[in-house]
Image (cartoon, rainbow, N blue to C red; front, side, top):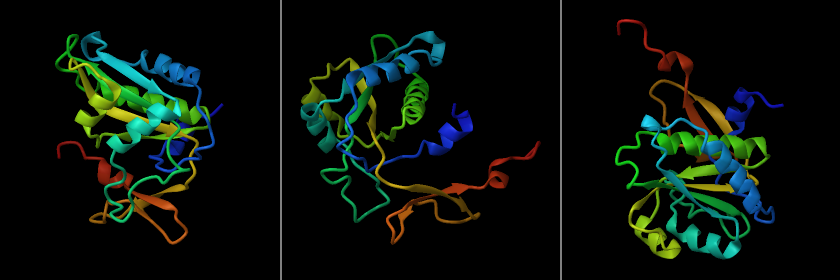
Length: 194
């Protein structure tokens, strides 16, 4: 069994997938079963989900998303390397107006569950929400928060130590390895009283 550390290290923001790898709806339901057990502000549990594992719906979701803003010369996954499933995370504003970070907790849990199953994904917040609302016929009381794109990763993502003052932007090298700079531990810890 993988350790939590191993799952976290393997849980990268993958943006290219093996599109021949199919994800069943039951797998998405298993991921939501995990997410429903996560903490919720005041235990209101306002999250709702739209699940898509079929090509027709996936094709309606894909153009509503923006991919990898730091990669200016890349328009996103090409046909053949697109996600094979999506989970749209919604907030039901009839249940709660202030959801704090419920959506982020749920999305991270979904991604860790996906990694445990040999998949990967990307949490996407850059969404054309009005278009997605129209494409999926989402009622107004359900606020679109995040889309989690899922599939079998078809790229290598490498974490790099970021020197203080270094550039935080991710990049791809000549071998198409996706590099993600991460601040070093010493820069993250604030001494007591500072």
